Image (tube, rainbow, N blue to C red; front, top):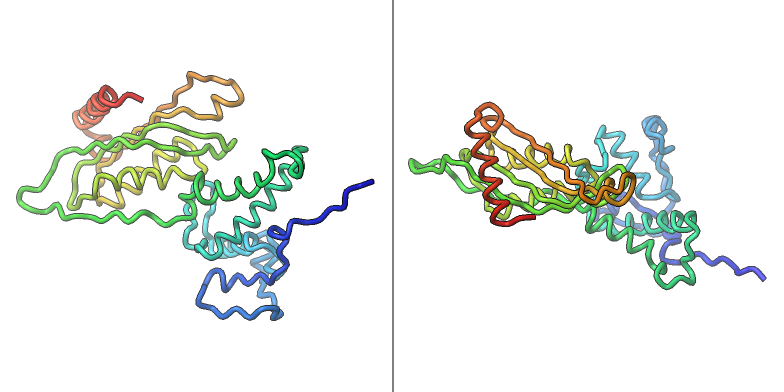
Length: 282
């Protein structure tokens, strides 16, 4: 006797999908009202076939970003397209997709107590934790003027612990970023350096790209052209698969302005890193 398949109600919601309401919460939602597709030739060119009401919100947003020429790589921030209202719908859709992945891996989601609910846990983890930096706007980095006659003109080096994910194999990247700047016309709170670094890290990325991302965002927040970022991390794509190198350590460096052009400034930065490592070894 074969077991009758009954779809899970929470993931097989047949309610009308109204993206305009999810993207713009102030819009009026009229239940069960037919919607005329606004698909254009650009939709077809985008590869999603245009929006139809029975399709997923994720497909609608993908097509919209393509029409807007908005890049949505694993390391890109797309917070302007993801609201708190539509994130829950996206989690539902991702959970359904993860169910299919688990099924294709021949994992019993019905009777294995450790696999029940795993699909939804994975979806929530990606959106709310591992890749949250894609869907959340930049942290508020309140700036303070640094323009008095006694302004600080020295170097600042901040140590920030990081958790990221390799976009090739979705393996963890764990390490430390050392961020250096030569103070410009404004300063930000010390904790903001770490908040910015972690916001950049909580995406799918490569360590080399992450170095560049952090340097760019720190420069934007401080108005300083003299920025340096050094990351020292272990990468799960080397430790947990492939060569299985459990002693693997990767170091990447981005130097801008005086950190690149002035050997004295460069030396001071790396000397400070050595002092920090002696104080708080990894």
